[in-house]
Length: 434
Image 1 (cartoon, rainbow, N blue to C red):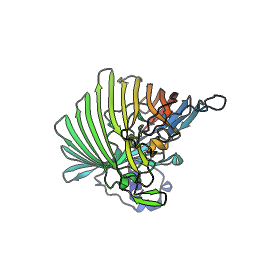
Image 2 (image 1 turned 90 degrees about the horizontal axis):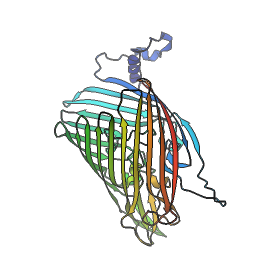
Image 3 (image 1 turned 45 degrees about the vertical axis):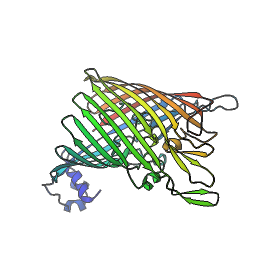
C-alpha cells in the first residue's frame, strides 16, 4: 500500500473511530496532503469467519479440506479393515475476508468502479493461512453496456443462481467453482434480456496453467440471460483450447507437438423467488470440467515413436437448491446434486493413458491401468441459518456425499470392483460481518 493510499484509509477510518493522539500517528504521513476534491469513493467491507467441521471418514479436498470434494476410496488392510474409515475434525479461520469497493469519476461517458477483495485461504496447500487475491476487477458502465476487466468469478458461476451451502465448495464438484482473469462485455438487449461475452484465462484452481498459456488464446464464453424481479434464467456456452505439450519424448526421439485439447461446455440455469422460498437449479454438459473444480479433466495417450494425443473427458451434472426467504432469525435450506464422469469419447486403445487436471492431481479420476477412478457422485445437504443480528450469524449444515469408485479404464471411466464410499460432514460456520 502506498503512503497516499494509507493516509486515505486513515482519513476515512477516523470518521468512525475516536481521533488518535498525535504520538500514535506516523510523522512521515503528517506531511502528506490528500486533495479534498477526490472523486474516488471507498467502501470497506468484509467479515471474520470461523469454521469447525467433522468428517465421518477421510476425504479428498482443498485448503485442509475446507473444500470437501470426494469421500476417499475404501482401502482395506490385511485384516479387511477400511483404512479410510477414520473420522477427522478441524477448525480454521482462514476464510475471513476483507475488501474494498471503489467508485470513480466518469470516463468516456461511462461510470467507473472497482472491486479488490482478498482472504487468508492461500493459493496452495502449502500456502494455507496466507493472504491471496479473490477479486481484482474494474468495470466501466454505460447505459446499456458494461465492460469488466480483471479477476472475478468465472461466468459459469452465476451470482443470481448459486447453491447457498455453508462450506466453501459453492457446490463443487457438482457445480463450478472458479475465479479467473478475464475481459467481459455485457450488453443489455432490453430491460430484461442481456448477452455477455468473455475472454478468460487461468490462474488459480489448476495444478499447472502452462497448457492454457501455450494455447496462445483465451477461453471464449457466451451467455444469454433473462432477469425479472423474481425470475432469472439463462444459457451459457464455453470453448476452451489447450496445448498440453510443446514436444513428445519417445525413447531417444524428440518430436515437436502442436496437439490440442478442444473442449465445449454448455450450462442452463434458472432461479425463482416465491413468497416462502428461493429455488435455484442448473444442469451442465461439460468437457475438461476440472478447470471448474468439477469431476473431469482430459487424457493424454502415448505410443512409441508417435506424438502424444489428447482427448477431453465428458462430465454431466445437475443440482437444485432451496432457500427459505424469511425475516425471522432462523432460515432453512436444502441442496441436492449429482455429477457423472462420462469419460473420453475416443480413447486410443493400446496407448499409455495419463489424466490431467486438478481432479486428477487430487487422485479422483484416472485412465491408468491399476488406478482407481470415480464414476459418479451425489450430495444431499440440509442446513439452517441463525441470524442473530445484522453483524453476527451462525450457519450449520449436514453434508452427505457418496461416490462410486471403480477400476480405471483407458477412457477414464471405472469398471470392476465398484464400491461406494460415503462421508457425513457436520459443519458450523460463524460470521461477524462489517
